[in-house]
Length: 142
Image 1 (cartoon, rainbow, N blue to C red):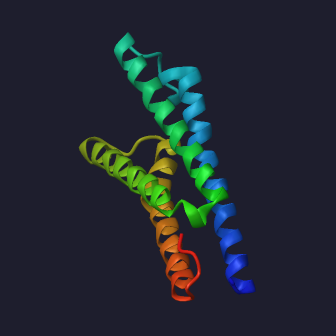
Image 2 (cartoon, one colour; image 1 turned 120 degrees about the horizontal axis):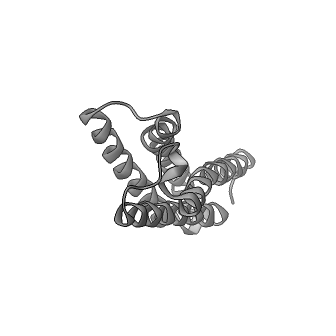
């Protein structure tokens, strides 16, 4: 049986993951709907770039929905949660590499970079802490 403080921490973790998942859901949905023009620039210069942008926006939306799915049953979905987190961090490294080649992107993309390389790794570490504590007590692991 989980202690009262463990239950509170688990619930807080779920709420934070749920709230954080709203970011890729909103950005992905907007990117699918508006295409590259959502970045404040001009419409995509060609059909292929537009298609690729909307596809990646759909992937982002899917990642956000999967994170939300994980939050609901985090004790049964630890592997999926970690896989999604690693995917986001790798994407953030790609964004960081792009910034190193030219310059930092606009504020919305810097916010994304912070989510990808700071918030998500922090959530992964928090999840690991909770998982270890629960595992030590012989209770279901995440």
